[in-house]
Length: 406
Image (cartoon, rainbow, N blue to C red; front, side, top):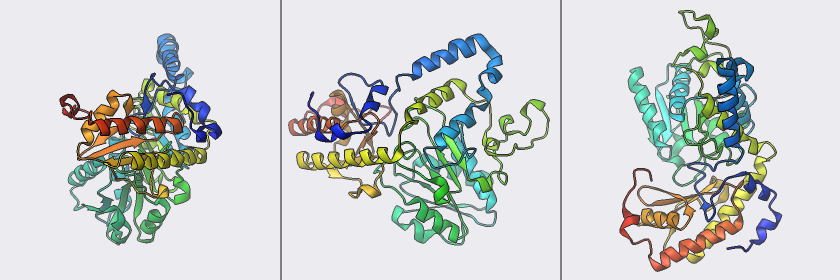
């Protein structure tokens, strides 16, 4: 398929596709689950391994500034999510960061006992909140409501409103500024999971007044499988909170090896153990692709791609039901469709080189990463989807057998 869609001729991001290693014959619509490898990252990792680790050895902590990599990487992410320098640190996993940040937030509201979330939140956040309230054993309650009911549920008993900005299943997006404002008016704190936002849609944590945020580095940020996550603490909270995991990297003087814990000032107090330098170096290097990119351009193209996708699917694949909000302003950078045999259809698509993913019970997810997708990719992908549905080529045993990772 060599034709070009008219919208691609004026695409200011078109050249960015060349920065990524996309296999021949693949249309990748799963960047909302695992981002594509930027071509320059392997050489950078080889440099870290062979030159920095290989030649400098332990000296590299100083000579190559390994010790500052969590904050330096955090600052790069901060530019994409509206966070001032010194408010974001890259470390640990999203789940671990949820534990640390939620614990810190609850400590700021000791008389309030409700953690408010919604049923569109990513399950790990809810699991962590449940485990934390049991661990604290101070009478906390995890209250889960429908996304549309969040604002009305923010009462004087709520300590923290904990939400994922973009629903992982449907792409529904919360109004961060509006909900944060409502939380503050009720005396509560606002904590946001940006796993499906960072690098995909414009985010303004500082402008919205968000108190805390977490997110991962392996989706739209393209940091690699299991890449370090990140966390944000608003400037006014940084010296009032302490991580519940008081590890040596959060100490005021880690190399003094004192036996008592004194948290360092600033965002680094939310770090715990020795940073994973190889993984952090991959994420730090991957962020190079955003250096000359305006998030407003990414958002415009994301909307254009997703609107085209919905139009094409609804015209050619009437068997599918739109599961995402129709209004692009209420949607992140993904579109989901429902189909009873969605798993099998997705496996047939992947077999044909169109890679998306599936979420139980019947949701097929398609992520739109403007840095490496074109409008023609979208048209071509839908043609393949149409053929699979029309011929029922998905109806084969190998496509219906559930793999461990879906």
